[in-house]
Each structure stands twice: as C-alpha cells, then as structure tokens.
Amino acid sequence: MKKILVAALAAGLCLPFAIGAQEKKPQDPEAVFKRLDRNNDGKLSKEEYVGNLEGEKKSKKENRFAQLDKNNDGFLSLEEFKAGMTKKKN
Image (cartoon, rainbow, N blue to C red):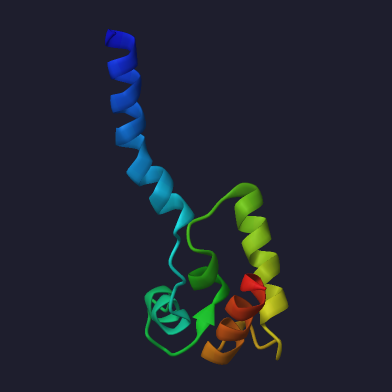
C-alpha cells in the first residue's frame, strides 16, 4: 500500500513539470534580441550571441551565427536574428 501511495504522489508531483515541458511557449524574437544585446547598440556581436557556452555547444552557436549573418559584417541585425528564429521553427 505504501509503495502505491508513494508512486502516485511521485507521479502527481512530476506531472506539472512534464506538462510544462511539452507546452513551450514561443519566444518573442524582439524580446530575446533585446535581452542578448547587452551593450544596447541595436546589433548582436558573436560574443553576445554565443554567451558563455563552451565546447560543442559554443561551436554550434558560432556556426549558427555565421549562417545568420547574411551581410557578413560580424553582427546580427534584428532582421537577421528574426529571420533565423523563423527558420528554426520550421
């Protein structure tokens, strides 16, 4: 009886987390851009975009930055960033 009760409680406690993980809200690209733009210059440098990631995650994020930087100026404009977020969803 105790095992069943413990299992039921554990399942009930985990359910909100499992539901929340499935219901991921889409992020507003402009809000994300503003949060990443730490120096508020209206563009994202590679350092701002990558943040403090390391290893393979950092490498992937650097490659993604290069793909998104369509005019190869070393920065992401809001338009480039928004286009990248749109493509990522599809």
